[in-house]
Length: 128
Image (tube, rainbow, N blue to C red; front, side, top):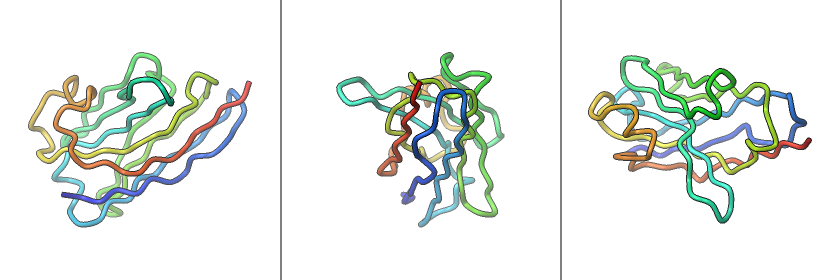
C-alpha cells in the first residue's frame, strides 16, 4: 500500500489555473497506476484522469484538453495541472493509486477499478 497526501487546492475565478500535487510515501509510485478523481457532495465520484506505468493517460471528456496528469518518479509525486477552470470543476479532488502500473486498462482505472489507495482530498472552488 502507499500513503497519499494531496495539496494545491484553493479558490480561483473561472478561466484560472491550479496545479494539484499528490505526494506518496510507503512505496514507489512507479509500481502503481495513478489517478485523480473528484466528488461533489451528494453526487457520485467521477474519474478525472489516470496514468499508467508507460505514461499513457486517459481523461474524462469534460476535462480533456484542459487538464494534464503527470508524475515525477524521482519526487514520488503525482500532479494535475488544471487550466481554463470552470465553475463545474468545483469539487473535492482525490488522488488514488492501484498496484500494478499496467495491470488493467485505463478506461477501467478511470472508473476507480482496482484503485485501492486514496488520499484525503483537496478542495477546489471555482467562482464565476
